[in-house]
Image 1 (cartoon, rainbow, N blue to C red):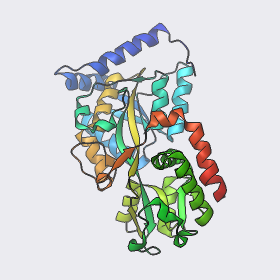
Image 2 (cartoon, helix red, strand yellow; image 1 turned 90 degrees about the vertical axis):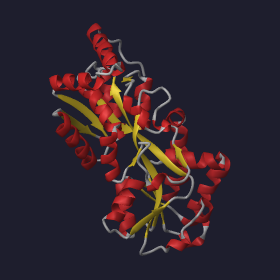
Image 3 (cartoon, rainbow, N blue to C red; image 1 turned 60 degrees about the vertical axis):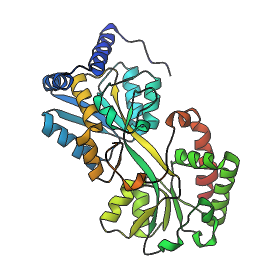
Image 4 (cartoon, one colour; image 1 turned 120 degrees about the vertical axis):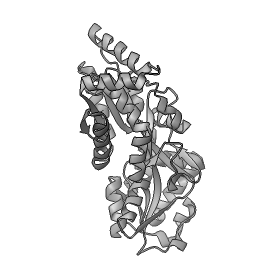
Length: 338
């Protein structure tokens, strides 16, 4: 997609945003705070769950006295909104946070701006995109969740091949759009072998396909889906903490999807935006997320989800072959399960 050429005023705005984002002087934070107080607010587009956004923006407002105007949608929703605004030369968003699969297309459309944040030194190297125009804020680790009233811990599968056993007939569930997880698992086996394995699992034991990770987690807790293959770890842990009859485990290797943040190249409130960008990957933002059971990207915060081998989904590679893997997921898992 080719976006329209920018007017001189927009180019001037880009230059100002880049200057603020790239500044690394000793007075960087103070300059950002003073600029943010003049700007008074920023606009944040995000797919982070509402309660978790609220915790983050409340802490930021309390610390800096800067309001965060939030527009929430799923990652595809904010991707399309930002692209639409860019085509109309209407630049409203300052910072965006969502799946790396939504941020990568925005990078390719030249709508993001690298931030040379000192807080990048405190995150794991895998969190930073190779082009450095977005950085992960947390990792959505896929875990396998099961209903503890229906399944005994000692009977849990240790490999994906164990899911071929007759004991799992009509007990398995999966999320309807997790084609990137599927691609990662299949490629680990080798494409031919991996596709054959999933075809055999679905043919032998069936698969309940549900849309939405929160719904899938709730169905495990309710016993409607005894064992789900693609539940987000933080949702499983939150449900377990609330006392639901649910626990989780990982068929190795653990696979994670990055939820990242990026600064808009035409951010209308650049000082407040960069200050908020820093906050989300800094100690305060990362500890807020950790308390809410997220797998953070901080080097200093341990998580039960990242104790073993962990593979991050390569959003750039998946984007290049998205249609192929979406079609294979539909053909192999989703359609036969209906």
